[in-house]
Image 1 (tube, helix red, strand yellow):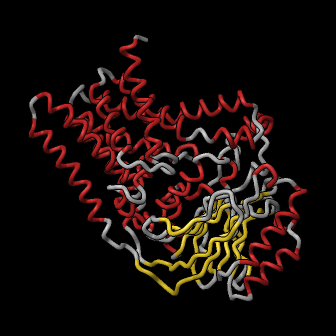
Image 2: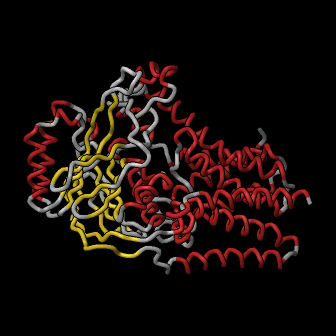
Image 3: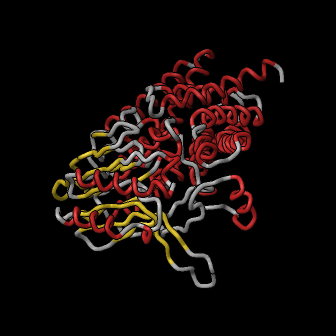
Length: 505
C-alpha cells in the first residue's frame, strides 16, 4: 500500500480512537461531532465503495480498539485465557465490530457518486442503522454507540427521551454530514449551500436545547430513602469458597449501617446458590429490613429443575427481595456471551470451557417480560449488569415502575474505563425512560442518577461503603418509552432510500 493510500486510513483510525475521549470518563465536548465530520468528509471524497468501506473499517478499529480494550482484562486476567489467545480474541472482536461502519461507508459510496450530497444522506442513515444492528445482532454489543457521548449535557442529549440513544446518534451524524458538505462546497463557490448546512446544524442544536426544557414525566409518590451498598470484594477472591465467610460478614456489617427503607446490594453479592447461604445470614437481612417496613434486594444465584425433555438443571443470575414485602425474584434475561452463556454450545462449548475459567458460565434466561418488584412501598424495575445497555429491553419494566435499579459487578474489568462507560450508559437509560436509575455495584461505579440523566451522587471507586440517597419515583411516559427504537430505524431507512433516489437523479 502506497503512503498516499495509507494516510487516509491512518487518519480515520486516529479519528476513531480520539472519539473515545468524548465518552466517560473524559467527556470532552464536541469530539464526537468533529470525528464524525471527518469520517463523513472522507466518505464524501472516497473514489470507490471499497475505499469508503476501508475508511469505515479503520474508524471502527480505532474506536473499538481504544474504547473496548478493557475486555482483555476480563478474559485474560480473570477468565484465565492465555495472553496470546486473549489478544487474538479481542482483535477478532474489534475487527467484527469495525465491519459495521465499514458496511455503512460501502453502502453510501456504492449507490451515490463521489462528492454528492446524496452520498452523505445515505451515510447518515446507514451509520445509524448499522450501529443499531451491531447493538443487537448475535446478542449485541451496544458499547460506544455515538449517542452515549452526548449524555448528560451535550447539545443533542435531549433527543434521547424522544427516540433513544440511536436518535441521538442519527442527529450527530446528520449534523456531521451537513458540516462535511459545507466544507466540501465552500471551495467550489457555493456559499448558499454551505450556509444552509450550517443553518441545519444550528437548528438541530436548537431543537435539542428546546427539548431539554420539556419534562416528559412527573414525580409520583413519597420520597424513598435508599441505601446502595458497595462491598468492594475483589474479583480474584469473589468466587473463592474460603472467602465466603468474609463476604457474609462484610455485607451484614454494611447493611446494619444503612438507613434506607430499601437496601440494594450488588450483582451476585453472595456469589453462590441461594441454598448455600446460611439461614442466619438471610434471617439477619430480613430482620433489618422488616424493622424499617422495608426490603433488601440481594444478588445471588438460584436454580430450577430441568425443563421437560432436558436433563440439565437451570440456574439464574438473580436478585431476590427480602423483608417486609412478599418474596420476589428478578432473573437476568440478557446474558453475556461466553461469560454467562455459551453460543453454539454443542459445537464450541468444549473449546470455550478449555480456555476460559469463568464460574457459572452457562446460565438460563429469566424471561423478557418479568414483573416489576413491589418493595418498600414502590414499584421498582430491576436489571442486572449490562442489561441496562439495551434500552428497548428496559421499556417493559419502566412502564410498570417508577424507579429503575441496576446491580452489577464491573470488577471484571479492573481499573479500566469500562465501569465509567457503563455508568454513562445507565444515565442514558434514565434519560430515555424518564425514570431515576439507582446503581449498586461491587467495586463501582455505585451511583444515583436522576430522571434527567444527571448523576446526583456516587461512591468513590474501589472503596467499601454505603451511598445513602433519597429518590422519588416518576410517572408518565417519554416518547421513547411509548415507541422504542422503531421510529429512528424507519427514519434511517427513509434517509437511505431518499439518498439512493437522489443519486439516481
